Image 1 (cartoon, rainbow over the protein chains, first blue to last red):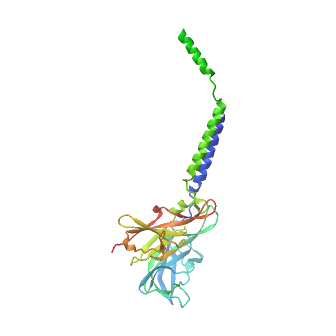
Image 2 (tube, rainbow over the protein chains, first blue to last red; image 1 turned 45 degrees about the vertical axis):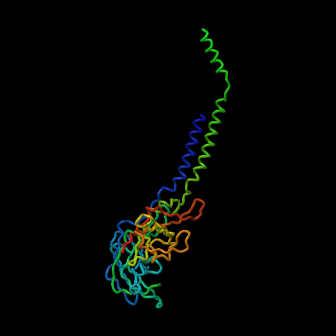
Image 3 (tube, rainbow over the protein chains, first blue to last red; image 1 turned 180 degrees about the vertical axis):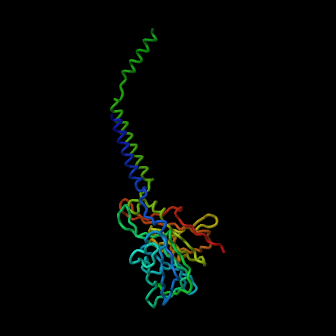
Length: 164
Length: 178
């Protein structure tokens, strides 16, 4: 009788120790951008008055809520690497950009209004879509970056004003 | 006959010898096992790492698998650019500069890299090496750079702690020898 009690107690204690040790290794449902998210830069990127205007088309199968935009920047002939063209970081559309629609995907002209900021030549633009997705575990809407749907476009003669 | 009698006497003597009662023996055995188990548990606990979690109670090691990094050296090979294209914020990056012989030097670029952000123009001025205030490095002296993410997690006591992801989660950037 004592043997059984000890055996069961030991088994319960061991299972508790193993559970508390291993529970952090259980993967949570990863919030991931669907594979069919896709975005393209339509028309030619226009650069006027030291600002850049980009028109986007959602050619994927899911809504897109915004994007990050980076430019391969040069100060004169010297490359300074990728710069955020939208100071605030993530640009959000007023309402989601729906698949195959263009009207909802209008962006602000990118670039600084401050005339004392330096001018940069942008030679390539890189856009990464952003989606707001519901997390099944927390029930909250979370913003996720679709690193699997980055779009790049080479441009010429584009000079815009950006913060240093 | 004598031999038979002798055997009987010996076995009787044996039966009369006193020993520990079965209950005491069991209690002693159980107590010893428990004591040994406690000693082994406390000894082994020193070898176990305290779990660091991120995103609730998920182990930070699993978060390392979700990191999406890209790295690029500029044409002059003096500036490194690192982009975080995933959804895991990176606290800082560790650079492992590996030479042709397989030897390496480790440096830390202590800048936070939020999701979707890019660290621009990382050069020798931005890097620190353990026990050194400044490090003078020339990327061209090396064969490749391994960019290893360092994540910020929480311990069970709620304390924030940095976790250096394993090398397999690092991004390799090869350096062109001129």
